[in-house]
Each structure stands twice: as C-alpha cells, then as structure tokens.
Length: 569
Image (cartoon, rainbow, N blue to C red; front, side, top):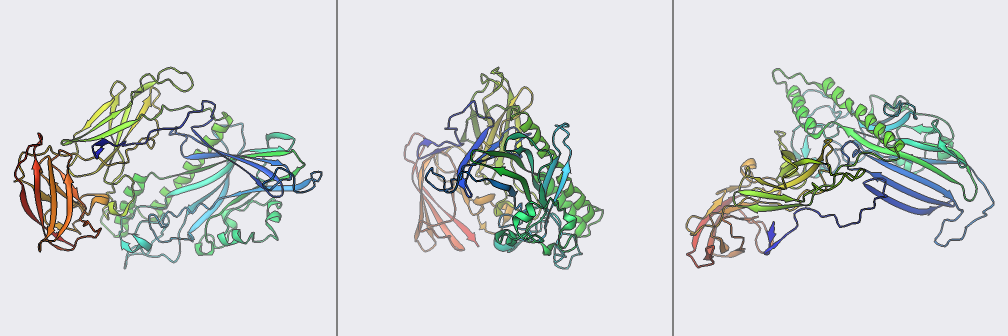
C-alpha cells in the first residue's frame, strides 16, 4: 500500500543469509555452562514443510568440563567422576487454551488439565525405538456444571467458549472448543553411555505424569525424598496413578510431565547426547468452531441436536492419535538425518489498494530449483485472504454465531501467473493476503512467511465534485455489530464520494474543531476512527464534516461542501 506518497512493504522480506548446510529450515543454537561443570549445547530444528511444521526437534549435548563460570578454567577437581547423573526434561503444556488469550473458564493453573504417558510403536520407523510419549490435555472440572445460567449439567472437557474480555467479563457463548489440542514430547535418541553413542531404546529411565507447578518450584517430587530419587526409581507413572483421577481435576494444578534419562558416569571430556521432539496436534480451528455450535444446540435442547457431551469428548480425544502421528513423523525425520522434502520458498508479495479492487503481485519462482535437485519445480501458486484484522481471535472479530473471521483460500493460479486482482471486496473493509508456492508434487510453502501485515482497501476513484460526499454508516451506532466494519475498525466511519484531494475538517455541533484529515490518496474514500486530535473518543452527538481545499485529479480547484452525521454510543 502507499502511505506518505511511498510504497510501503506489505509483507515481510527475508533479509538473512541462507546456509545450504543447515539441516532444517530454521535452527536456533544455544550454548552455556552449568553446574556441576557441564558445557551445554542445545539446538532446535523446525521445518516449513506442512507435513512437519507441527513439531520441533531439540538436540541436547552435555559435555563434562568441571567449568561453570565465565573464565575457561575448571572450578573443581578435574580428576573426579560424576556418578549416576540423570538428565531431566519436562513441560507445562497448559493445554487449557482458556488462559488470558481466548477465555474459557480457567485462566491460570489449568486445574482441569491432565497428563499421561503411553508407549507408541512407530509406524514410520518400524525397526526403531518405541516412542514413550508424555502428553497433556484438557479434562472436565467437577465445579463447572453449567455452560449458561439455568442450563443442563455438562462436561466442560474442551472448554466450550463462554466469554471473552478481561477475566472472561463479556458473555459470548459461541461454544467453540478453545482447548481442543494435545501437546506432548518424546525422546528420539538417547546415548547408551558416554563411550557408546548408539540409541538406548530402553530410555527414558523414569516418567512422572502430572506435577503441580508448586512441586516444581520446591523441587518436591511427591513420594520421593528428592528429584534424584525419583529419576533413579525406574517408575513410570500414568494418569491412573494421579491424585483425583478421574473425578476431581482440582486435585492437580497444571499438567507438568517429566522424563528422566540416565544414569551416566562422566569424567572430564565425556559427553552425552539426548534428542527429543515436542509436538502439538488436535482438532482444526474450523472443526472446533463448527462442532462447538453443534454441541451448543444440544446443550440448549434444540430439536434434532444429538452432538452431546459424549460425542464431543470422543471427537476431542482423536487429538491424541494426531499428536502421536506428529511425533512419529519427528522420529522419521531424525532417522532421515533431518533430510525431509523441502518446499519452495514463499514469494515476496506486494499488495496494492485499488479502485474497487485490490491488486497482488509476487515474485516469479518459475526458475527457482528444488533444494535437493536444483531442478525448477514450480507447479503453481495459492492465494489466501483475511478480512478485518491481521491476526485471528481478537475480541472484535468473535461473535456468538461462531462466524469468526479466518484466513481462507480464495484462488489457485498457474505457475506462469505472478499477479492477481481481487474484485470480490467491500469498500472500506481491511484485507490481508498471503501467497504460497506449490511444487509439482503438491508440497506447499509456508502460509505464514509473507502474509501482508498492512491492510489494503478497495476504493472508488476520486469524484469531480464534493457535493455528493456521504458518511457511512450514518448514524453510527456503536453496538450495531456486523452493520459496522470488522475487527479493530469496528469504531470507524467511512467517508465516500470524496474529491481526489481535499482537507476534511470535523466539528462539533457547537463549532469546535476536533479533527483535521488531509485526504491525498486520489481515491473517493477515506476513514476516521472517531478519535479526536487530542486522542479522545468522541461522545454521542451531531457532528459536522467540512470538505474544503478540494481539487480534482488534475489538481484543479473545485467547490467544497458541508455534511452532518450522528454518533450514538
């Protein structure tokens, strides 16, 4: 889009350097020293391949140096041996998405969350290790017994959305399942010993299913004298062993599973490598919305509605299988030495507001070679669009009908095409776009790499007269919902039929000037967010718009005009 007479970059440009030796699309490396004298190297690997973008692989190398401060000299006797050392990994999954982002019932401790572990034989690496998967999910809280005041008793597994706003202050019973995901982790490789770096498929040595965050802070592992005693115990706790299961979720505060690996004996120069993957999967966002509405119909007793608590919980539970498949793909990728199919890069994208349309133009990737073969591999492009805000899930775009504004595919185009005109747009509405590249095998580049962050607007070319200027909507009603613009622009009015260039002055009915807008785009449209020059929302009342210093497309002076409009808060 253009601002201040210059073309603003509508989507992010890649400004880094591509390392062809990098084993993943992105690698983050962290190195630090830790007591009792370990040089720790951590690497995370992530991928843009849409079949592998729901997990991250973590490589951890622990080198014994007996050095843990800023200087390079050892801090203790380098001739000693560290005996029976365990390395412990854990995650607080907080799978209740009803936190301070999307609001369901619980906002802090996730008191209706559970964690478990299961062994999963790999289907992609049949001769490899069994995946010992620790995972968490949202369960039922016995204290939550009604979704709406006076309604029937219900099971709140999945957290059907009941509110938005600070602390869930605004009722919004869309019933979307905001806690519909399963998150988990599993080891992909564990060194047998410091002198044997083959994979020890018997690891992890110990697993605990569900810990309170307070236990973690206090290093208190219930039933064991110390964390080391737990790690050395060889126990593998399932959800069946946890306090309160399955009736009283309030007995647990957070789903925090741990896995311990060891024991190892280390002398100076010894190292241990442990690799694991962290993944998330579950219902698609659209399915969580659609099935939430079906469940709400059952809850309200609507005729013919059959999607009850049992059906809801069975659907949500399919997320566990999806998570296990995700971590199986991670195991396969690690055994492939991270050599997985690489999608084409996302093309650089330019989005331009236009007269009753929005124009897209993107980088030509027809000559870009496949990362492995160097042979050009472009099959076509795919175009996505989002109306309203750039991000989803903002309060201004959620409504009880469940018709949330989402990113959606609007077109597939040929590999020879690098432009697209979107004519199916509404003047005054904000639009964002993304364009992906599809290779000949159907592999798609990332949908997130080039999404346009600046909004684009369709506009009418400027008029030759100022006499027909209109304010839309007029009157402006703050509670009019879908009759106003979407998203963050719900508090915006559109000024239409403007001359190409003019000065817009807004006065109160008593003649106080509260806002001046220099209209310089050449279009017939402009907008105002109902905020004064002193950064205050205007109150209910009658206001006057004065159009002056008007000029046509040739910058020749034309007459101005005066118009009234009404705002009702």
